[in-house]
Length: 304
Image (cartoon, rainbow, N blue to C red; front, side, top):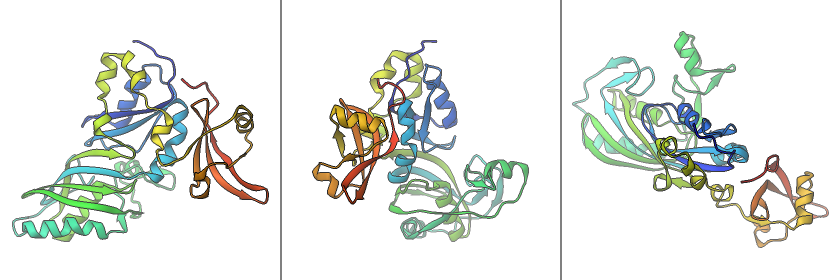
């Protein structure tokens, strides 16, 4: 196995349907990437954009997941419910769907845009009393129904070939597409499960720049050229180049003065030292002026 030095940045993977997100990361970890994480897991059934965070970029996870929207396309099937709310689960009920019209389906898909919260699937990584719901569900331990805030900014019906419906949604981070399918089935009175799902976009990267994990196991040397710098993952953040004196202050956890036009409107910034990401910063107003205060340091290890 070819082992590479630890890299720092974001790798955009095209996860195939089948393996878990963790398994996809393991394949990259074996290439010497011991410090690794991801921004937004995908269920085994799902395929598409998986943002892998390497080295100092692992500190971006909370920022990417809280601020970035996602786009999914998928297929749901009417007439069933399962314990996982997708086609990989145990079938709980089956019901006739023939009374449902295409107009009914299109109306209910469009209604997703009115949702402000959604039920969390019983088989999910959300936790109850410190335990993931999927572990409790496997043990048959009851847990209260949890709900999560969501915002659907786009909901399109792409094809109706009943009992199957192909759709596309743009949504806030953390949205469960299985839950959208399940709730649609409940409203139509026949049940529905998710059968296919592709994440087409996870802010700010799309499928057009994603690479298959198998590409890197076949040619490990390809990895370094595909890792994108931290600045590309935070395109809305001003990237501020520091003087050597300012960089020294930041390395000691000290704030530096805001001196850019963006300081009046931006609340977060990426501080750079000789073009390399040094720290994530937040805007703070003090009696002495406006400063960039260190939110997360990125200097613990050398940048590559």
